[in-house]
Image (cartoon, helix red, strand yellow):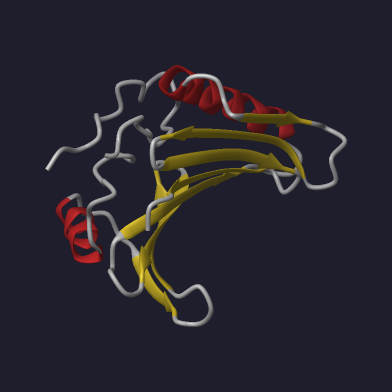
Length: 163
C-alpha cells in the first residue's frame, strides 16, 4: 500500500497537514483504507481520536482527531462499506486575529497551488456575509476545498467523489 509523502513542505507550512495530488491523499491515509485500517494507523502513531456514528440521513461513521498539529481532523466513512470518502480539517483563529488567519490561508493556498495547480474555482470577497475566501481544486476522483470564514476558521475538505 502506498502512503502519502511525509510533509515535504512541513516546515514551510507551519504544521499544515499535507495533502497529495494522488489517490493517497492525506498524510498516512489513502482512499482505499477502511475504518479499521485508519484506526490501526492512528494507534500505531499514538494519535488519540474519538469515534461517532450518524445513522440518520446521509449515514456515516466519523473518526475525529481534536488536535493534529494545531488542526482538528475528521475522517468520514461510508456506513455500508466502511471506506474512507472524506477528510475535513479545520484550524481556528481568534476573531481579533483575522490577519494571522489570512496569512495561514495564504500559506495553505500557495501549497495547494504548487501541488494541484490553479484552482477550478476561486472566490475572494471580504464583504461576503460568511465566507470571504473559497478555493476549489479537482484532480481525478478527488476534490479539495479551502475556505476562510468570518468565524475565523480555515476549513479544508477533501472529498473522494467515487463512493
